Length: 267
Image (cartoon, rainbow, N blue to C red; front, side, top):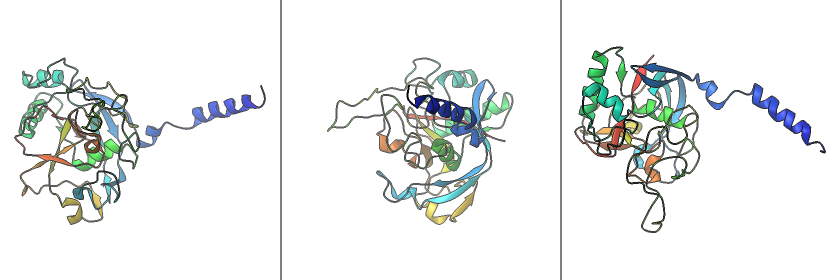
């Protein structure tokens, strides 16, 4: 047996006394209106991407410190079933089952959904801010993805891992059921891929550079671009667009088969 037995005891002891990665984030789950939410304690993080990150766009910098109050965020993207129960219709192109994310919804449509959802019961639902979304997606990491420097289309997320040079990659050409792939370290599913998600902010290419180096609960209310922010990338996008820092955008009336949403609530 040699001395291997004591290594096993040490490993077991470490597993018992060291808390899981998300324990420090104050993770707690609760249902609101029958939908699962994860509570994220307030904290500070570095928002944006560092110079030199592969695929980095100019609108992702400068990297800056952001501090947030605690909030609740959907454990998964809003599903077709959750949308149908509130709105009485299913706009999704990929109408496979109630467990697939709803898509083909505009930012304007989402506001109507949230209004009706709030009027029907508990209230308090909203879209996450762009900063809240990135904080949740990073789950305490500083790498391009919550899972590290790269992303596996077979095991970690639904996206287009296929190019002209590498046509053998995975491209499902459709959404997948929520919670099919592993969650990030804070228990959130599909923060990378499946459908790209509307957030609360207006889009400005230079919003970060115009802001102070340290921000508290930031949100962009400048509508001069006429564009709203999208986050997370989708089944249609390449991995570079699924990075935690990547900023997408579109007009608020755009309904595309790659666009959906995730809900949030303040404490």
